[in-house]
Picture 1 (cartoon, rainbow, N blue to C red):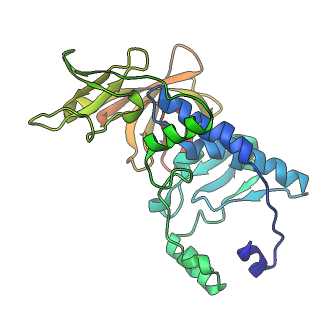
Picture 2 (cartoon, rainbow, N blue to C red):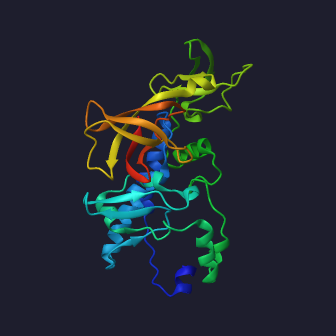
Picture 3 (cartoon, one colour):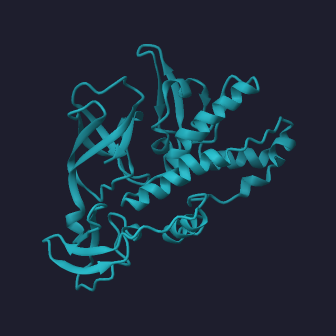
Length: 304
């Protein structure tokens, strides 16, 4: 509100509390309860920022929306498609969270920061006398400011009048041996090292979470590596669909360096499979897998 007043532009408040709770928070909770590790930022982009915000824009007579995401959006007349690209400031690249944008949404969206670096943006804000030029970056999930997911899940379910499901079960070694018990699968994510409740002369990590048996498999760091990935709930950007094997680089986490892989259609057109050139650590169900061709976002999906 202060920025809009300072710049002399209209300011609107759009209440999306119910949609945010339904499409982002509840989905986040539901995914954790079945042993997956969700990304609420991608859900928020898909369901609110580039869905509901576009509807609001139309209702007030605006032809496009502009956001502060660090990404580049260009139209390619030869392919007849809008192309999403990585920004100039690679350290602030947010294309990983934007893989779900449709062609219609990209056509109506501007990313004015795509060709700028974060220091240049701060300088521009200072030049206009905006106090937010000194605002520190935030790396936390907005509705879990302390980062304690387990405490949030418990508090949310209590608020909704729902009991925390009993998902206690066995801790098993990769050999199949039972080495302990745990209080619930919501306390674990693939790749986790701390809080396993098992002593060992060498570090142990979560390898797999079974939402049916409630077994959590643990093992050595090298056992986290895999060359295979399957993803579903796909969205394609630079191509209309994947009909043949394609060489891409795949990002499996926001801070993950994209790794070379061969991407292929699966048995159904709703999923794809990928084989990495080199094993990748902690491919985690519930996270996004985003496919790149150089700077272009080919598309992406959710890791199964």
